[in-house]
Image (tube, rainbow, N blue to C red):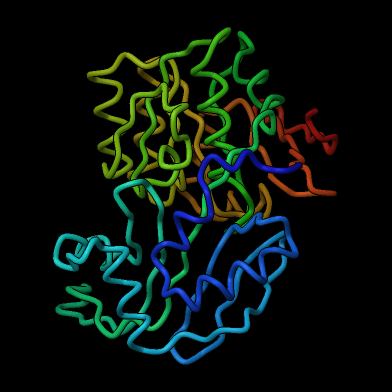
Length: 302
């Protein structure tokens, strides 16, 4: 399955020094330009992730080049991005997200700043039209309550959510969808297909509360539920009559249930099913677990 490259890798490469960008282009040429990630580390070779493979590029990244990349991603205003840098990422004005790490400065157990950034991972969102059509049919079923999509990091959860938004916001469904996009990853990859109400940068719980109170959505979509507060907000939305489609990090339903707040949420009736996301022969596969009767279906949804 080849993505719709409306979000060009060239935009991501525009933040890199010329020699590094050229090295990335040469490595990517072997994979038809389908780059999911560009990873820079100070004084180390540059790597790209393409086709589920980590590919070494010919160029490395110096300390000065790392600083120039960080400044470029921040629009030459590190101060304006200081809060998200503390959280481990930078988001550009067009929705591209880069993970960052370096030396944390702490005070009373809390991170107050991050200095000496030594690693940057630029994630490139892609569109896969049709990839989530099977999930969309489940969501539009009259018995639908909600859905949680799980996979390990990098498994395509955000891509699946993005395709759900694009498909269900458009005719013939034309649902009123509120997207709580805390890290600017879902809506940034939709481009001109953004027919949703986007609460960008909101904390997840606050975003869901705001959506229910002010936007009268028919569906709330939220990425990476990861705290008891987030789970409570999903439950409150369900209690208000608004189903949620959310994602979480886990390799199995059993791993989901290892977190008490997630176990309680899954058993509360807020979700009709849990969807394990995988990639097989270049296509997304979905392993469905009914949370109503705990029956498991190993068959992928077409």
